[in-house]
Length: 174
Image 1 (cartoon, rainbow, N blue to C red):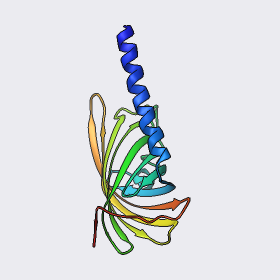
Image 2: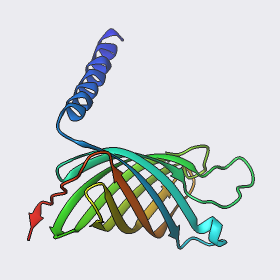
Image 3: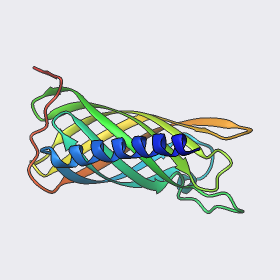
Image 4: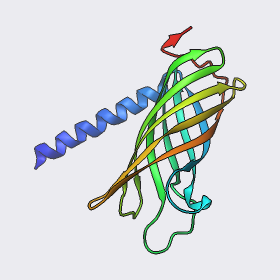
């Protein structure tokens, strides 16, 4: 029992150390608003999503925490659409002011039957100014629970505001 506790403490300290190193390195903090629409059945409101992400970007990699609603329609019963998600992002290719992005994500939808949410998103980001970036995103959300699973395709636009000027780079620069 004591060995398990010490082992767990070591894992927690290692995670805290990595987070502290990440926030100490040169990085930019951002906030992002991302409305989108899915191909799920229902009204326009039920197909609409809205999220806010706060994160940090280091060179071509960023990591954010996304809070949002997987539907803006009225929910009947105990089920909910509110979620929180971890979203790493990689800038793959850049030409001029345009950058190709890839974002996998994993999160939880609170009190939902399909409460695990994973995401694969691709985007085309435009650097409007050093502080404002606009990203057209498309991809899929995968939802799963104990007895069911589903997925939807989505398309959206995200608007990212950096708190200091950004010089986005990519793995491959042409």
